[in-house]
Image (tube, rainbow, N blue to C red; front, side, top):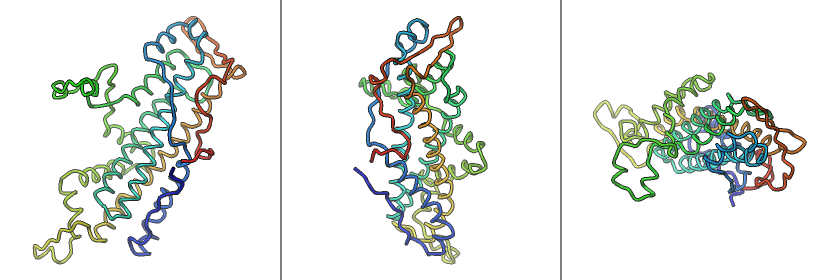
Length: 325
């Protein structure tokens, strides 16, 4: 069990550089980790099959007779969104701290790039979920269908044929991947990043920073430069020095350019997690006294949970919860 927050070393650069460029963002990331590391280390979820869920939604009488299945199915899928994101957030921060402390610039750009992707994908799906309305107690059958569809696309989106791999069909793996109802197509990450860039001024430059991190991450000119001493007068004579660990000037140049956007993306992930926790709290609180209604084309089903003790999930999701990581 991890009970302490990993810390960025404060001796990597001059005190002036730390004060001017780094410490504000390092403190921000460390606080984020401290807040969300209070989550439990694991969470068990319960889902019904797509076919069973659709049968329930297609039949007003069935939905009246099985309200817990309807509520729990979407309730647990929101938990999947929450916990998969919070665990990725924590591991991304741990990795960034390690790379910072080890002066591993290659690792820094790889996990910095992942942080932007994590934020962009979360934002993409959250905006779609918000369009359905999340903090209310009445839905149309179409809205429930759409919530389920979005959450499954989040959990199952891929660009690899996992069915072929697990089935041992290696010849099929050589073919161009075509998504199916089971293997949903993953969203285009650049589309998600551009969507994030238009969200608010803080993300205005996120695509530029992501493109720079991508060139650093790939075996292109950017990644070569991670191991070259920052250009100085020697370069004018054709002299270049490569080193396993880049000098502090090169490291400062790269981190000054990338840390603010990485910290902003991680912090926004924290905001989205808080918003998701609110939805989970609502969906986990339906009872006979809190009526949940579903409107069909010709009728309305009123859902009342008579025995909330049979529901599976715990009630603590906010970072202020008592569970320790």
